[in-house]
Length: 182
Image 1 (cartoon, rainbow, N blue to C red):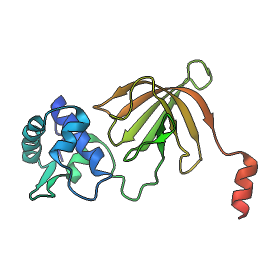
Image 2 (image 1 turned 90 degrees about the vertical axis):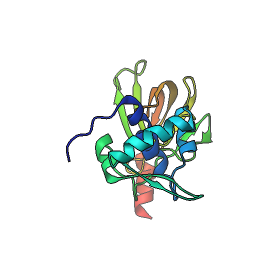
Image 3 (image 1 turned 135 degrees about the horizontal axis):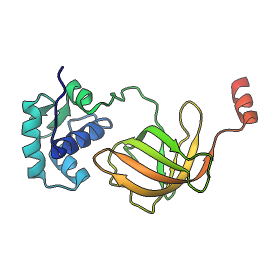
Image 4 (image 1 turned 30 degrees about the vertical axis):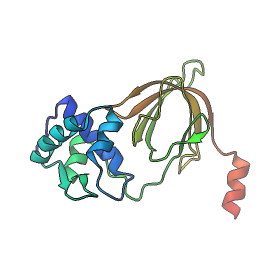
């Protein structure tokens, strides 16, 4: 399939749809998409028409209708479907954030605790996160990593959070041995 070039607006709407669809059993409404990207529903409807023409979304009519991303949407955005994926919980100021899952954690400057940053790629709306929020991520499914820090910035289009890390921990070796013995 040839690479589809999307406008910034199309990419933003499609990214929001893909993120919201990951946690939904029903099609995603245009209103939910508009709310997640802070745009008007009419703007979303206009973008959806062009995305349907590109075969990146399907419209579902009816009272429970909305939009569903196609396989082409995931391919165009370069993301994988998260079907059957393990979850990594996220909390803001100690309160769990529903409908958000961490897809990727990229650490930088780990050797310098004063400059340690993490880029979190998330699935779900970035709306619940603002600069200055204290965020806790984890434990991650494989390693049990738990990460905490302060949000420096959010990127709605790329669904990333830039975090100033103030703590990182993994289960102790003793706890892992006890768990393995069970």
